[in-house]
Image (cartoon, rainbow, N blue to C red; front, side, top):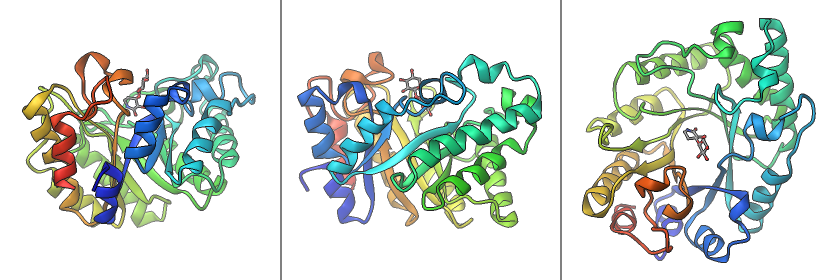
Length: 301
Ligand code: XIL
């Protein structure tokens, strides 16, 4: 295959990238995006502080540009993210009653998922509800609404866009541990009670403190056995050369070992505009050249 997306497609999977609307005018960026990737995730354009900075005034322009681009190239779209404790406008943080905040969550999900209805393949509905020790993160949603905020977000997303597949997304959940156990229990409970959930996103950020776990495939498989698809949603590995390449191959092989691991997405198009730019975490370098990690992924796929 001559691209990551073609190699993945030959095995029945989708290979995507996180992308930025502001870079679409850059010919090198767009050429690589279009050639290599079959799914696009807006990096920041759908986040609450961008899309509804003022209550009830939605600004869909940047996200719409990314979706128009994706659709014109036949790419899938992963929406990200409907409810997350980070990148919130201050008006949300300042709602001090649980009932009031729940209303704001419902209106936000309805406004955003409703606007994009029919154009989103997968929604990251909720990001990062747990701490690394597996407790509920002490966010504004958790404090004011309690545990039910997560399912409320999924129920609102299902109502607004019943055709989109709904995912829970988190980081450092790639292997077994207290955090991934907590997400597992959330998903098990949702499935048991009929709360709509279709997929679990594993951000798959790796670095010298968080290496690709040896039990990653086994961990992905246990989630799949709950009846959900599993996705690598922001795959990246800090570093360079063969060490980085080997870690990429290990993560991709973990996904490939699980039939329901259907989507792999890297956290950016190239190192030039990475969220972690100093750490060169992507398979394509800042001159759009193919790194050893690119070839190790291509070979693994
Ligand atoms: C990051 C973006 O990449 C940055 O541009 C932004 O400044 C901060 O957020 N987990 C997620 C992503 O789910 O949405 C985050 O994206 C990175 C961590």
